[in-house]
Image (tube, rainbow, N blue to C red; front, side, top):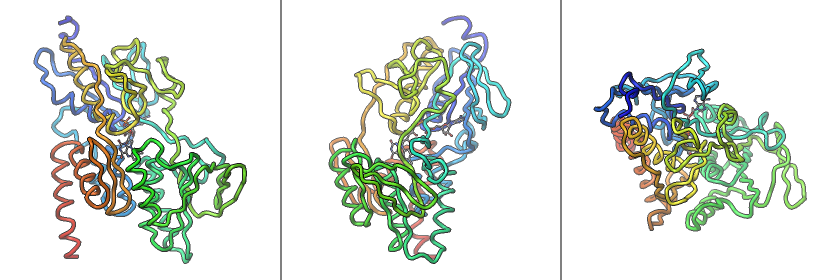
Length: 400
Ligand SMILES: Cc1cc2nc3c(=O)[nH]c(=O)nc-3n(C[C@H](O)[C@H](O)[C@H](O)COP(=O)(O)OP(=O)(O)OC[C@H]3O[C@@H](n4cnc5c(N)ncnc54)[C@H](O)[C@@H]3O)c2cc1C
């Protein structure tokens, strides 16, 4: 073992407490640190709570509560020995190995994990930043909730919502909002391509189309958005421009890497993602690991890793292991991605899933999806609390 690793506690700094970062920290804290003193593990996030993003939609329909899908880091990290710093990451000096935080603190690192995720670009079309809402964080849910309440409490007969982007988020949001707004809802889903969910298996796409049709969601395919104003959207269908009045616009198109990552003097791809080796280390910087939405990575078999929670969760297991192996002079492992398939919510009691040779839709898929996500939630204690809440909810609802 190299001498310096023995001398003092190594500093492992993990930036971003989402699927990549939080699970890397938890993995590291569980590994046996016998040969060297246990490293100091610091997790940094700008928010005080982890967000289980695939269940974010459920807050809009009241199916789930914030504490269930967004437990505070203080709770998750209790008794793990992991330190938590709530602050935005302002800059990273890869030469001095220091991270600068928005609260004026500075952290030194021996190993750095970059897992700051992605952002929704709000500059693709004029008016998006000023008039449309993105949907990626708890704050976005609160903003949307406030806008929906005003509309619901108004005396309007029709509540007109345009959702831009027919990918997973757009489709799932459309289904939930259609149920929430009921007969008053006039929801249109605008997609530039010829079809919604272009990366999904046929089974899921068809199930989604069926659900959207049943909920009377209007589909605008092959339609671009030219401009968004406070009360309208300008649509372009094959050169024909139409201005449609709307009460609310949701923007779900695109993912970009944060400026603090883009500006690093490290190898990036054309979209600003950091290029990593199969072992999840940034090219030419073995002390820096990058994972999740900000990383451009191919696994041991050459598969390009998709920007999903499933992939970040699996990468976290390898990142944690590899940092431990590296610090304790063991061989590190190339990442092997296992595509377990895809699940989507299509309303309050409907979902679709395709994976591991199984296809399922309807209520059973809804239950399987919930259970699969429960098993992925951080810490056994949180899983138990949420599991008990889900089991007792139908009884409490009956009694109330
Ligand atoms: C609404 C929604 C639904 C989704 N549904 C699914 C799904 O069903 N299945 C699936 O596989 N994937 C889904 N995804 C994608 C999935 O959530 C992401 O691919 C995954 O979260 C990526 O993990 P990550 O660790 O890279 O980033 P994240 O999980 O986004 O975590 C990044 C963390 O970094 C923090 N952060 C960012 N910038 C800073 C900064 N400057 N300073 C400090 N902290 C910062 C953030 O607060 C966040 O906690 C969904 C995404 C969204 C938005």
